[in-house]
Image (cartoon, rainbow, N blue to C red; front, side, top):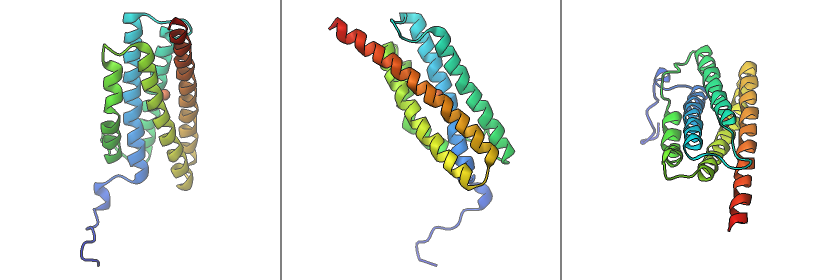
Length: 177
Ligand SMILES: [Fe+2]
């Protein structure tokens, strides 16, 4: 054994990589549900803009995130994991993305800037979903692959929608300048 080799951690003490990443997506889906909720409150308070988000659209996107969370809880449970556990990767991602939530929640942040911030969150999610598809494929978890691909498709549509609203805002602001 090398002199500085790490002592092996008991396998029961840490979740598998798959459960670790699923836990991270669960935390992220809940954070995104909260962010869409905050966006809805911002729109309620300040009003929307032409070709910007309607309240119903934002509520629907929040509900999609809740659906993702429910699917992830089911998947983690099916794999023998504990969905109540904050996995190491979930904790790391939460730390890395905390600022996104703070910017969106800040009352000084206007709706277009909050939308731009959610674009960043959805882009990060797509990267993570994509990695999860690869891992689930490699592990032969066919059912999970289908679930994750469906969530990836929904978040792809979220990103496209956010980009349309962001573009409409830029057109409006540049016309006013
Ligand atoms: Fe999303």
